[in-house]
Amino acid sequence: TTATTHYTSSRTSNSPSIRALQLEYSKLQKEPVEGFTVKLDDDSNLYKWHVGIFGPPDTLYE
Image 1 (cartoon, rainbow, N blue to C red):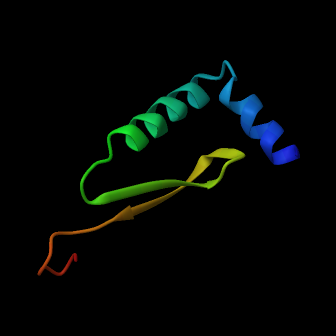
Image 2: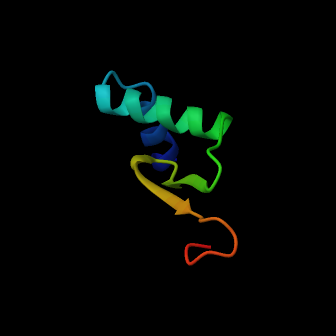
């Protein structure tokens, strides 16, 4: 599909920004940070992420 093709081509791009995002996303998937969730909004777009931030229990930021 077009989305898969775009995602695949962007993942192999020589663009420094794409490479940096690939590395960061991969690292966060392999080694999640406590209190955060990170997912791609759309697999075809490495520039749009969904990030969840969760505070400690029993605080205003829970």
